[in-house]
Image 1 (spheres, one colour):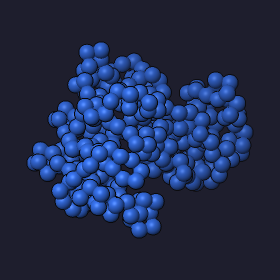
Image 2: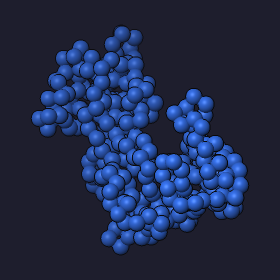
Image 3: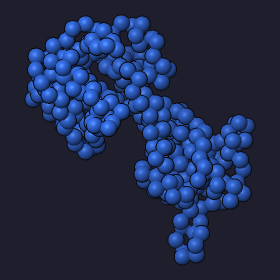
Image 4: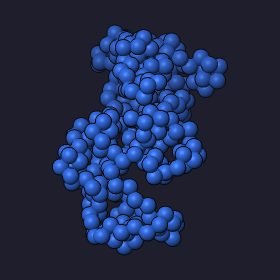
Length: 297
């Protein structure tokens, strides 16, 4: 199955660090001497965030190097489910256990923790020119993840800066088989929009094997955020006063959610969940997915 990425947008994700941020020196970079005095550094994440550092991984041996360079007693990992890891991090912070924690969190947990003072304001240790030279998507992330006049996010080129940018990925084989218009031409002619997607949905969504059950659709699962953002909406907005305001009651967001509900519940042209099984198995024409999910598909 051949696939192409057509549309990009910014989706924010927080990989945040708890209140101790220290510089380091090695053969690759020199930020000054550091001594953890034998303390344990704990990663908190919803998956094994250290897998690349194990034997055979792309960064094998780096943990032992870091322990030696910085006098770290141990580096350990604590995991919790996607819905639980934010509360785990908050509990560690409130109990005083997070002095040397590094947290890998879903973006939805950011403001819950930022408003509790759980993140270190990195703009106090990094100069303005550092943030100015970052990529546009990272600068946008910094702006959206600011709170009370401070920046809590910094980047050293990790994949998450781009891994959650969503793409519309199409199944060219299905497009050809169903006699659909060329998606490249639609995009280049500025005709790739909700109307054409709905037309595609009416044409391809059906029962293909005669068992009475629909098994082919226009669209795999669509995260509501993608619909909202593509329509100029937002979940929250940063006001001129520096406060964060609820934005799901704006017309752009409401209309996007209404359209998504129509596709899923009235027309039935979108089906599945975040795992994208329907697109991976060739049963949908289009999948809207983040960059990290495209390769496995």
